[in-house]
Image 1 (spheres, one colour):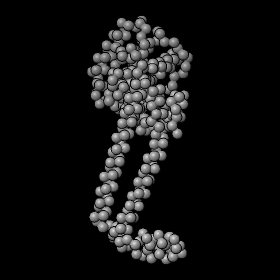
Image 2 (cartoon, chains in turn red, orange; image 1 turned 90 degrees about the vertical axis):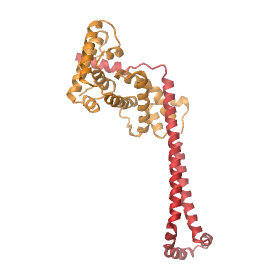
Image 3 (cartoon, one colour; image 1 turned 90 degrees about the horizontal axis):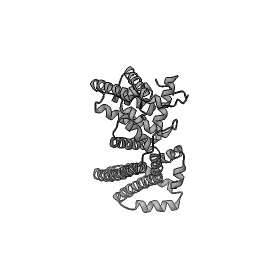
Length: 130
Length: 194
């Protein structure tokens, strides 16, 4: 019983740590490291994302992947065209989009995809910061 | 979404943890302000010098922030960070190979001699812990300061359970010899260790 009592007293003494005079300073220091780490991480992720996006985009364009995908789109386009026939306004918009060369359409699709990705990333980061 | 300074200062730890988990670094800063001293004090009591204790405490809080999603609120936030800090210290302590048999025996003898000379003096916990051998000090601090069970301490130290138990036993005996005359029994049941 005496041992248990001493152990309880020891735990109480360990828990009874005095507040150090530079407690606020320590908190500021930890906060600064946290902010610095977060800032560096943002720059790193942003930089890597930009570099990866550029490299990926250039490679996609150089290899002509989009042109090959475009050649596979004939059948779906016929299907879509027949469907759009029921909606004149949408059909008119589709005609505008498809009036350019095949390269223009590729760039348009790619830009659209990248824009959606960028908006998604921005929204995610914004919500996280809030 | 963000709280004012006064709101944060009066908020419960669990509320601050929830805010920090959503990325509110100011809420986490309040937790650091509240519990930083306790974590630093534990590390000093384990044997770290003040500068090392501050560095490790900082690392512990940064780790806690990274892993705050893992904190389930089953115990106090301070106890959780203390466990992280204690593990960081033990890892460093083991790396520096302070746990050697010869050192243990040398300091054990020195501590025993010191206990005989100063047994009637009123010595606080910090001074009493300094008289223990490093292994005893770490084991006692892990079990009574950071809330480790003997088995958890043995795993953290990568040491046999029996060795840890004997370090704790010897450490307790020495502490009791130095602290008991001034200690006021609380009549509380101790938490089980083992």
